[in-house]
Image 1: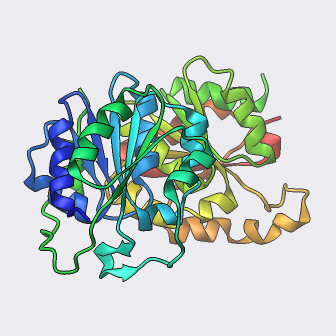
Image 2: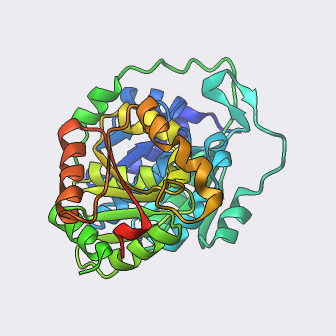
Amino acid sequence: MTARRPLLEALVAMLARDDVLVSSLGANSRYLPHLNVTAPVFALCDSMGAAIPLALGMALQRPDRHVVALEGDGSLLMCPNVLATVAAARPSNLTALLWVNGHYESSGGQALPSAPVDWSALAKGFGIANVERVGDVPALRAAFPRARAAKAPALLVVDVAFDPSEPIPPYSERPDEIRARFRIA
Amino acid sequence: MSGAGRIVAGLEAAGVTLAASVPDTWIGKLMATVRRSRTIRAVDAAREEEAVAIACGATLAGGRGAVLIQNAGLFNCGGVLAGLVSLYRIPCFFIVSYRGDRRDPIYYHEPKGRVTEPTLSAWGLPFAIADHTTDLEAQVVRGVESAVASSGPAVLLISGEDIE
C-alpha cells in the first residue's frame, strides 16, 4: 500500500492557485506546511469531522473556486451523515479525499472499530454519485481530474499505508497564523 | 410582518449570506422564511456540528454564516465550538430555539430548558434572549455584529412566540 507523503505530494501538485484546500487534523495538516502548495490552505489541528462541512460552506460561498477537502476515515466514521448533507447541497465545486488507513493516526495509532466499512458504497448510498477508490499515485493522478470535472460533489477513497514509525513532522503553524493567512481572493 | 420575517430581515441586514440548519418545529418555521430570502443560502445539515462548520466555511470564504438549531443541537456542538470556532477565532452567530423555558408548552423539553443558560455560561458563549415585543430585527443585527466584533460565537435564544 502506498505511503501518505507521495500521495499528498501528487495531490498538491495537481492543485491550481485558484483552488482551496481544507485539511482535517493529523498527518496531512502536519505535512502541508512542508510542501509547495499554491492554493490557500485551511489546516485543522482539532475538531475531527469538520473538514468536509467546512469545505462545503466555502464551496457554497465561492462557487467560482474548487474546494478540496482532506478527511480521515476515523473522522468521517464519527459523522458519516455529512455525506448526506453534501449530496443534498449538491455543490458543483467540492471534491473530498478520504484517507483510509484504519487507524487514529494522530492520537497514537489506535485501530478504528474493526468493521469493514465500504466507504464507496456508503457514499453512493448517501447520494454522492462520483466516487472512486484509489490506491496509488498513478490512480490518484488519473482520478482527481475526473473528480474536479464532475460538476457535482465527488469523493475519492484513498487507501493509504499506516506506518507507526512514519516520521510525520509536528504541527508547525498555530491556528491564529493559519486563520490570519487564509484568504480566498 | 411575522416574527420570522423580522428575524430574517435582521439576518439580511447584517449581511448573512448562508444559514445552516437542523430544524425543530420552531426553527423549521423560521427556515421556511429563510428559504424565501434572495440573499441568504439555506443549507440543510444532518447534524448540528456540521451546520457550525458549514457556517464557518462560508465566513472564511468571505461571506457571513449563521447557524439555526435547537438548544439540544447546540449541546452537541461543544467540540466544534472549542476546536473550530474558538480555536480559529471565527465569527459564528447562532439562532437557537429555547426549548423547555417557561414559554414552551411541551413538557418533555423542560430538562433541556433547565440546563440551557448554565451550559451557555459554562461554555463561555455570549447570549441574549429574544424579545418579540421590541425590535427583533435589531436584536439579530446586534447578535451578528457581536460575533464579528469578538471573532467568536454569539447566540440569540428564541421562543415559539418570537417567530409568530
